[in-house]
Amino acid sequence: MRKFVVLLALAVAVLIISGCIGGNVPTKMPMESEVQETTPQENTQSETQEEYGTWASPWDVSKPIEIKGKKYHIASLRYEYKVRYPGSNEVKEYTVIKERKKAKIEVYGSSFNSESGEIEKVKIGEYEVYEYYTELIPKNGDVLEVYVWTNGESDVMDMYFTFPVPATMIFAGQNFVAIKLISGDKMYEMYNPAGVGNYNYMPYENGDLGWFTNSEEVENLYGSFFAVYQFPFWSALEEENLYTPAEESFSYMGISYNYRITPQSTVVVAGHKFRTSKVEWTYSFTGQGSAKGYAVLTSSLPVPLQLEGVFAVQGQAWYAYMKLLDIGLKEA
Image: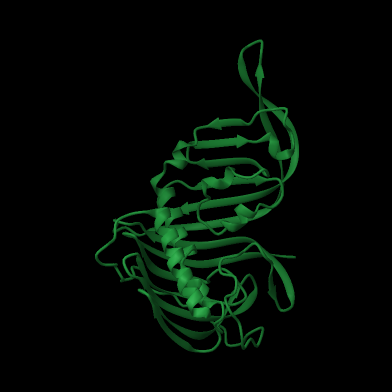
């Protein structure tokens, strides 16, 4: 029954992805990797003697994780990301830094001056907020910095915390306070006084957001990561023991997947040792999409230590490679 439910999820998720990124159906999916696989640093001894572990919450960084009986929040991530966009032969390379923490900022609003007839900037005051920070460092090009400030932790921002660029939905929700984007000589900022409970002033905006929202690079970065993040195969691992070798093949009504689980040794991240397994997969949904790749996982973290694959959905063939470089943990 579980496999049947997973297959239905595969179909639904692939259709959702195709609706988000569109395109025409390809005749053949490119299956060759442009990046040589890298094996994580291995250690001969493990901090724990885990015999059973599943990837039960794929990509969910909103909940605390448990290491040796202690609970931690994931406060920051740093990873390498490589992507080839649909129709392109170039693999673009980035370093992505993500941070979230409490902070204090000055909040501004705007007010209409009836005498001058102009909209004026008004300083409202200093407030404690929750800061979501993104730094996108391309191998070639300007660095992009994005600050999103919310009135307390945001479910939306937590959901998309791992993404290399934030979605435009960051403006949604009553707890949105402010945003600032900086890249080279381009800048945009917007403050929402209502986010801190002040309804006496209108939002304050400075700069043009078009350079970000109309950026093909930003769109492709978001689209590629969305294809990986929503990859329906992840749910098939929720009942599999990562630390026991296994192979599985399954198909139903035009949907099929195959995978192999190979336990490895341990890897050190943020001073902690994690037992790892390599999972190799293929899947296809007739007429809709297909994928091939691998991921190095540990049951202790909801983010892959490494992954590489080609994800083709409705004509959009994305090549993606991700390697976790560091992770910041804060005791819960």
